[in-house]
Image (cartoon, rainbow, N blue to C red; front, side):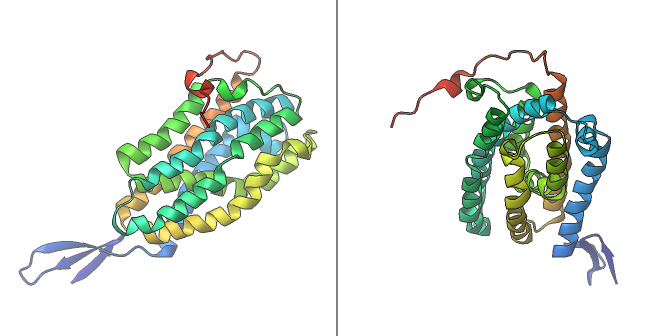
Length: 262
């Protein structure tokens, strides 16, 4: 007698004891679970005041500049976060170290795109690289490190999926709305880059998922990371907009004022 439950099978052994056997996850099942998790966040974003303002074409230049400031701080950390994940790969997972590191390298410099966009909008960006980010931004960054080091490093794929899949799905609309508000193309390089390049990055993530996510527990952790990243990203943008004109000065970061010896 066999009864299938999710990805597990309950099998009656000859001795009449019950054995629970993990069944292989299909590509379709993994993809659907991840996209369902993302869609859940996307529905929340529709009622989020910042994302809703973007969709309605109500987000102004001042709000966009505040968001870019935090995007800079977040994007700067991402290449090193992805590289960190590979230090936890074991067994056949090591076969993906090179691919992960190559992907991480392609993210280097994206923080500079955000700075360039700010400069194109007339902002003095000279002090931004050494300032401390808003706490909500630090929370988003810190979650990625925590997921990798203390939960399940494969859950990081969910963090990555949210960041890569969202601009592919929503980027064209964001670009259109910001242009309608008078933002020039010279100040849209960060979104433009991610709305196009992230299409190929999403294909990379499909490979990661196919080969690295093998159990229901891993898939559940990836979906948890998608939802968590989505919520924290919303809070980062909300915080950026909320603090316009009254942004508390969190000071300069001593670690970011270091000069490398070459």
